[in-house]
Length: 183
Image (tube, rainbow, N blue to C red; front, side, top):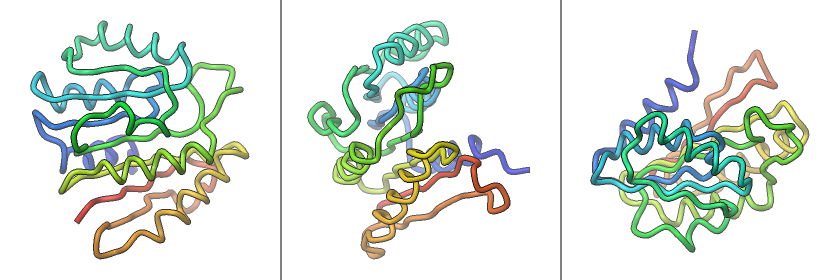
């Protein structure tokens, strides 16, 4: 059976190397931040964003507990403002849309800021870079967000970007993801 998390990581690892810059646009509890931090190593940089202070605190504690390299900067700021804080070109970016795992699910990513954040992420891409966007369609905003993200990405120039969607076709409310690779 396909493991979507392993598949996501394999796509990221095809682009991201030690010394690179990466962004976790939705840090949550820090799992993607830790993966990116370990991958870029001591000489790399990771920027991570979340609007919930609880997410930032959870991520900070987890990164320390997991022994992640001290190459990350955490921001309690919406992902659509990432370009204000990220320095340099980005080799890999990850979005895990939806809500903070373990929360009351009242705060979710919203399509308005997500679409702006994706524009920013694409504009900051380095050569041979990737942006991965995980969609969680099991709630109304997630379904709308996924549809609008798909519409936006389908309009990118195929000469500049390769865009793909990975989805379990017989499970319409299961998570799925898009990748955008620069050519």
